[in-house]
Image 1 (tube, rainbow, N blue to C red):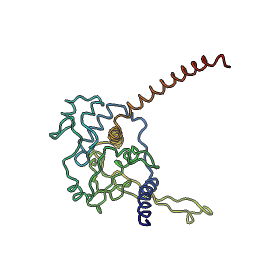
Image 2: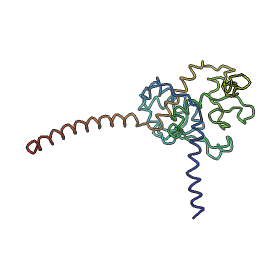
Image 3: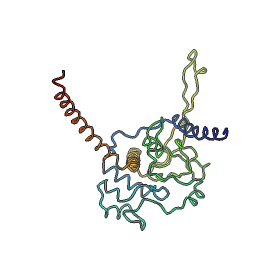
Image 4: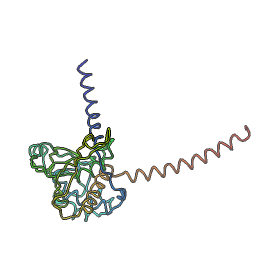
Amino acid sequence: MMIVVILASLALAAPLAATASEEGLKLDRMPVDVNPNDPVSLQRGAQVYVNYCMGCHSAAYMRYNRMQDLGLTEQQIRDNLIFTGAKVGDLMTIGMAARDAKEWFGASPPDLSVIARARASGAGSGADWLYTYLRSFYRDPARPTGWNNTVFPNVGMPHVLYQLQGEQALKTEVKLLPRGSGKKEEALRIEEPRLELEKPGTMTPVEYDRLVADLVNFLVYVSEPVKHFRQQVGMYLLMFLGALFVLAYALKKEFWKDVH
C-alpha cells in the first residue's frame, strides 16, 4: 500500500515540478497584432511548418484537407504543402520511425498537434513559449548539434531556421543592484544571460520574428482547428439564451400578474 502511495505522489509531483520550473522562465509575449483568424498568417505558418518542421515533427491529429479552412483549395494543398505520396485526406504524419529518431537525436521529436496547448504554464501561454523558444537558439560547440537554447537548455533539436535568423551567441551581462550604504563594492552583482546576433541570416530580426509568429499562429490553430467555429457557436448560443430569458420572464409576468 505504501508503495502505491509513493508512486502516486511521484506521479503528481512530476508535472508540478515541471510547471514550477517553467514559471521561472521569462517568456516574450506573442505579438498582439497576430490575428489567429488571419488566413494569410496561417497559410504562411503552414508553409513554414511543412518546409522546415515536418521532416521530424508530425501533426498526427491533423489532416491536410483541414487546411481548406484557411482558404486553400485541395489543389493548392496538394501542390504546395504535400511533398510525399500522401493524399489530401491523410493525416500529417512523417516517415521517420520513432526508434531511429531517438538514436539520431537522443529523443524522439514530439508530435506538434497539441504542442501549443501542452506548453502553457504560469509563465505564459503555449504560444508565448513557442514564440520565445524559436527565437532563443544560440551556437554551442559543446552540444552534439552545435546548438543550444535558453528556453530549453540542452535541447536535442538543431536550429533548423538558422539560415533565416542567423547565428546568435550567449553573452553574460553584469548588473549591480545597490544595497546597504549604496557603495559600488556593496552592490549585489547579478549576471543575466542575453543573446546577441553575431552572424545575420537572410532575414532581418523583425522579419524573422514575424515569420516565427506566423508559424506559432499555425501551431495554435492546429491544436484546436474548430476553436473559431466553437466561439461563434457560443456567441449565438448566448444570444439565443438571452432572448429566451426575455421571453420566459415576460411569460412569467403574464402568468403571475393576477397573483401579485
